[in-house]
Image (cartoon, rainbow over all chains, first blue to last red):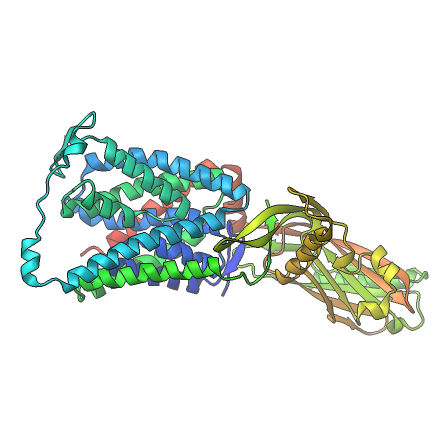
Length: 305
Length: 250
């Protein structure tokens, strides 16, 4: 069976696409990540034009983050105040990201930009995660007790202007660092077709020093808004959001995520993190090989719009 | 089926009326719908050879020419560690699709001047290449030939021997296939009749490839009101995500 995608303008096998959604959903449910960093490269490998893959992923992440944030809303583990500043910065970053994307698309360099951004970010994050999880696995139980971290507001952030209290996070800091962080992640989201949780969550933990229990909920909250803005901007500026493709991916993704969550509880947190790090590095390596090896054909011919 | 019979009947009438040597063609369907299930289309063309004693002694070449399109050609270059595409060269006025079919190799049917005159192979197409940076003279033809071979790889430019069968008397049919990535717009379908290397007749018909149904609505919505379409996509995603969380609530 074939289904013709109206925006990608190509036929796909809907079962293959749903299976891809389910596979990535399974991994994202198991590891508690958004999965955009897996889905966008997978769509490109499948033959979806890179610009459409990025635009469509933004709208798919809206859907998967909404279903993820529901549980956090019920448990009241979302810092709305922090989320609002992250979104404010993220909106600006998303505008700049889509602008860069559009300019590079016109000059024909957007595929290179996407691949290079992936290699850099996945390489750095995957490397750090692997390093961290290997250390965690080698640590003895006594070490763990000693290393329990004391959390307090970073002093330099409180000394910046407009410092305020973030009750849900128990912090007294200026809103400028969260806005800068939001801006940066918003730009990544727009260029790479990801939610940016893989950058946002560690940054919230280690830079903003937010408590672990509100980090994931707040990250999902900001991802919904930023990817929603990114979706509208990609649709408006590039006409690259394929809603049929997005809904196919969502339908596979929600089922995969449920199964993934169930599989994830059977594994230890340290093992999960090490596996995720290997997965991230694997995608990074695959993209790097794609960039470094001579292409299958020396010329790229495309229909111009 | 009714249309097919009518076109056959029309052909037979014209075949008996016209005494001059020539060819008449008709498409069984002059519209191709690109809908959500579109994965390419089959075209059947009926034709009749007129005014000849021995109609099966002729050679037939058909040319399907898609609507004018713009293409971009980029050459991959190695810059330090990675391969990146070089400057964009734009191809203007090229047909979006070019399929030629013949009952035997075109070189055996028509001499080269005739092939060039009637564009019986993509090689003879006039395409304008606009270079953003002028390539050295030695590479001038490089992008043209690269375009032609890549368009063939994409399935848009093709030439094949076959698909033409002679039926009873002066009738023949041509079976062609439009690929799934065929462009939308107005097509020109031409049939050339050769005997002993000489063109003895030609006829053409038009074909429209249209987007229809849901596929068309989504495409038009996304391109005519892109901002509203963006909000629509967000709304659908929000609903889909919310429904998913309801479905799996513990």
